[in-house]
Amino acid sequence: MDTWANFLTSSWGKEFVAGAFGGTAGVVAGYPLVTLRIRQQQHASNCSAISILRGVFASEGSFALYRGMAAPLASVAFQNAIAFKTYAILSQAFDTNFQTNNHPSYTGAALGGIGTGVIQSILISPVELVKIRLQLQSNNTHEKNKQSGNYKGSADIAGSIIRTEGWRGIYRGFTITVLRDAPSYGIYFWTYEFMRENLHKGCRKTGQESFRTMLTAGGLAGVASWICCYPLDVIKTRIQAQSYSSQPKSMGIGECFRRSVKEEGYSFLWRGLGTTVARAFIVNGVIFTAYETALRCLVNDNKSCSNSNRK
Image (tube, rainbow, N blue to C red; front, side, top):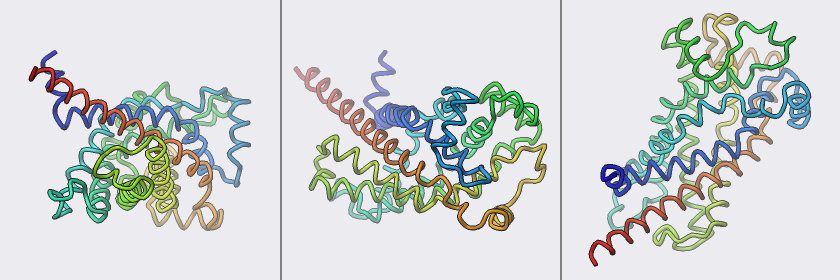
């Protein structure tokens, strides 16, 4: 118990628990829309999210929308703890006036976000590879017979990739994940800091912004970050969706782009954007609200404990 109490009073402990709350809430709230986005990006024709949703309900059932959620859910606590703590460290490091301001400058927020995106890619790339393979797997019996492999869950598909492709295979698409996440995380954290300050003046110093401010600023940060990196995400999805049996040699970024443009035109780069923007606003509003609320509760709880100990 003493170990757990000491953990919660530490900076890492607060970030970990708050990150777990925020990340878990975000995954559960937005995962069905992630599944729809992945399927839209892979569709040869420009199908709407509604038509894909109807097809999923008719042939696979509603639970298909949550297929592959175990992988991101299992890693979300650690992943978000690392993300928020890395951002806190790097945003302060890039801000020479941090000690006097008590909050990072907008430049510090952007640069700290870029660094966070690079580090996050190491964790995110394998998780998204597994998630994408599972989301594209159909429950339909006819389609199952066409597929080279059908997996029972995240652990099954991860083990299969490592056996057939080695550890290098689990990082298929890593380069484009870095290219996607570095700038998008910079825009993500910059937008959040900028919007929360403009929606609630002085809240970056006091930390007393309202739930509406957190939801709106977090939602807009998610939308801005996704719009800037969306074409790269479409290409990343297609690269990671390739199975070893159908494409032993991983298709590169340039080859994937040229082939897709030749077959479908440039419009494929924005396929599924509407679904993604809707999800981004909901999920990131929930993530920041849950994170900030949990962090505030932990800080207040520690203050209460300190006051009671003094008495």
